[in-house]
Length: 478
View: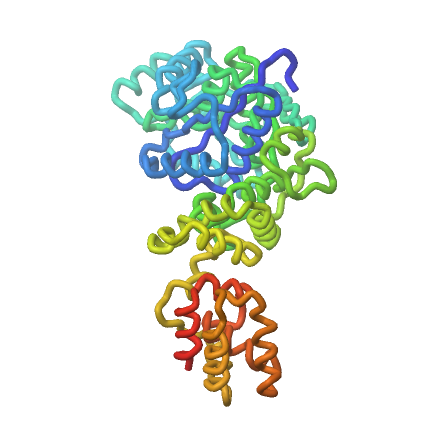
């Protein structure tokens, strides 16, 4: 860790879509690192892509982060002493740095057309050379630049990469990374439309916001030498770096929509527990120790160390995520679980007696993987007429089933307390009297009551349906 510098880290999403799983994991690591060291977690919005930005995207990103439990100390809705926290509001800072660079000579105007640059790089590729701009506009006389500017000739502004220098990056995950400046081309700082580029803006922002550590995905490692050289040109200290591994699909390739949902919001909307998702994201490249799989946000913070982040790609194991979801649900109290299930229950159900609802939550606890599963699992409890699935329909169509169900209904009609406290023993005795195997009775009873051959204990089903409904279903089943 950089000595004598307070920990200040940032997460800087672009509001051009939903929060990607990879971005959420990066945000989590930054948040955990800040909380572990009593530092500051900053949310900065990189909204310079004016054509693709939207308020809807920004709102969804903020909502997804709040759902995951990632609170920020500075940023949108919070403020802070180092704002503004949206790049679109920081143009004066960029303009001042651009003017400084042009004046001092480490930035220069380039009037080469995109067609020329593309053709140049294609020729270099054909010669098996590293494609790079040939610096044709470096050193243009001021008078010529002024003349071309006066007539409005399109141009970009490039960074003049110094000769024979070394960009040294001490990465907390990957160790020492060294890149010679000859390997870095004169990159574009300002596009022809006047908008500064990512590599320029993030350096200006990180420096002004006194960012101590840049924790981000390894795909940004290629940008880091450019940024290090820019820090040097500005005469500013560079932050520490930690480039976290890619998240890979179960096919071993970079996570994409082909291998499942990639937006955090999609998981929230399907009823994944936020605690399980945070736990799972924390396992993607990080480990508390060699044994612990289940941990809370507080436990992750207490153990968080950049040195415990792996270098190799992290597999997005859906089976493990679902196991964590189920484990999280089973650890909840009935009251807590019910509150989390309410959004997935229709209004009429939520108006039912509190004891009935708590029994519903307890009834399905062991079978739920996601909160959203309760809608389908419990649908049979709220419909007037049960539609049996294929297996249940087959069980109900067997010879003698109608008489069996009628007999069980008559048996249950005579009990005083509901549900019958010894329901299984009661039915087992009835089956023995009628020389039927208990399975020959219980299977059609379940099919008649729920429309399927699986689900909660039948005693729980009877309690939730009530006596009148249960008897009606047994008598009406076909």
